[in-house]
Amino acid sequence: LNDTQLGGTISAGSEAGPLDIPVGSRTLSVRAADGTTELASSRETFAADTEYTVVVGGTASNLLVTVLGDAIPTPAAGQSFVRFVNAN
Image (cartoon, rainbow, N blue to C red; front, side, top):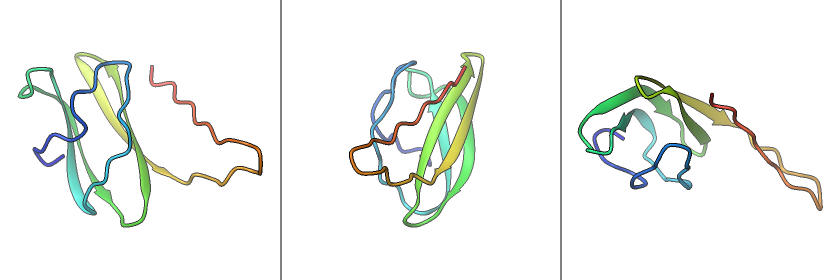
Protein backbone atom coordinates (compact mmCIF):
# COMPACT_ATOMS: atom_id res chain seq x y z
CA LEU A 1 0.00 0.00 0.00
CA ASN A 2 1.76 3.14 -1.22
CA ASP A 3 5.11 1.27 -1.02
CA THR A 4 4.48 0.01 2.53
CA GLN A 5 4.11 -3.76 3.00
CA LEU A 6 0.95 -4.69 4.87
CA GLY A 7 -0.16 -8.10 6.03
CA GLY A 8 3.15 -9.87 5.48
CA THR A 9 3.72 -12.34 2.68
CA ILE A 10 0.58 -13.84 1.16
CA SER A 11 1.19 -16.93 -0.96
CA ALA A 12 -0.91 -17.88 -3.98
CA GLY A 13 -4.13 -19.56 -2.90
CA SER A 14 -4.05 -18.02 0.58
CA GLU A 15 -5.66 -15.01 2.21
CA ALA A 16 -4.85 -12.19 4.60
CA GLY A 17 -6.97 -11.13 7.51
CA PRO A 18 -8.56 -7.69 7.85
CA LEU A 19 -6.22 -4.69 7.68
CA ASP A 20 -6.85 -1.11 8.75
CA ILE A 21 -5.68 1.40 6.14
CA PRO A 22 -5.96 5.18 5.91
CA VAL A 23 -8.83 6.62 3.87
CA GLY A 24 -8.17 8.32 0.55
CA SER A 25 -6.51 7.42 -2.71
CA ARG A 26 -4.02 4.54 -2.35
CA THR A 27 -1.98 2.36 -4.67
CA LEU A 28 -2.23 -1.38 -4.05
CA SER A 29 0.75 -3.32 -5.39
CA VAL A 30 1.29 -7.05 -5.69
CA ARG A 31 4.96 -7.93 -5.59
CA ALA A 32 6.95 -11.10 -6.19
CA ALA A 33 8.50 -12.90 -3.22
CA ASP A 34 11.68 -10.84 -3.73
CA GLY A 35 9.68 -7.81 -2.54
CA THR A 36 10.79 -5.56 -5.38
CA THR A 37 9.32 -6.94 -8.60
CA GLU A 38 5.83 -5.48 -9.06
CA LEU A 39 3.42 -7.98 -10.65
CA ALA A 40 0.25 -5.86 -10.59
CA SER A 41 -1.07 -2.62 -9.12
CA SER A 42 -4.28 -0.64 -8.84
CA ARG A 43 -5.00 2.92 -7.69
CA GLU A 44 -8.13 2.95 -5.52
CA THR A 45 -9.98 5.41 -3.29
CA PHE A 46 -11.04 4.12 0.12
CA ALA A 47 -13.83 5.78 2.09
CA ALA A 48 -14.12 6.08 5.85
CA ASP A 49 -16.17 3.49 7.74
CA THR A 50 -16.36 1.22 4.66
CA GLU A 51 -15.19 -2.36 4.24
CA TYR A 52 -13.57 -3.70 1.09
CA THR A 53 -12.42 -7.04 -0.29
CA VAL A 54 -9.31 -7.12 -2.50
CA VAL A 55 -9.02 -10.06 -4.90
CA VAL A 56 -5.91 -10.80 -6.93
CA GLY A 57 -6.44 -13.24 -9.78
CA GLY A 58 -5.23 -14.25 -13.19
CA THR A 59 -2.01 -15.89 -14.27
CA ALA A 60 1.46 -15.16 -12.91
CA SER A 61 2.25 -13.14 -16.02
CA ASN A 62 -1.09 -11.29 -16.09
CA LEU A 63 -2.43 -10.58 -12.57
CA LEU A 64 -5.46 -8.38 -12.00
CA VAL A 65 -6.26 -6.52 -8.77
CA THR A 66 -10.00 -6.12 -8.13
CA VAL A 67 -11.41 -4.10 -5.22
CA LEU A 68 -14.97 -4.81 -4.13
CA GLY A 69 -16.91 -2.52 -1.81
CA ASP A 70 -18.52 -4.71 0.84
CA ALA A 71 -22.15 -4.40 1.83
CA ILE A 72 -22.21 -7.24 4.31
CA PRO A 73 -25.75 -8.01 5.43
CA THR A 74 -26.54 -8.94 9.01
CA PRO A 75 -27.47 -12.63 8.99
CA ALA A 76 -30.72 -13.79 10.52
CA ALA A 77 -30.57 -15.17 14.04
CA GLY A 78 -28.84 -18.55 14.05
CA GLN A 79 -27.43 -18.04 10.53
CA SER A 80 -24.03 -17.05 9.10
CA PHE A 81 -22.96 -14.90 6.17
CA VAL A 82 -20.56 -16.63 3.73
CA ARG A 83 -18.95 -15.10 0.63
CA PHE A 84 -17.61 -17.27 -2.19
CA VAL A 85 -15.15 -15.88 -4.74
CA ASN A 86 -14.10 -17.79 -7.83
CA ALA A 87 -11.00 -15.87 -8.89
CA ASN A 88 -10.05 -18.15 -11.78
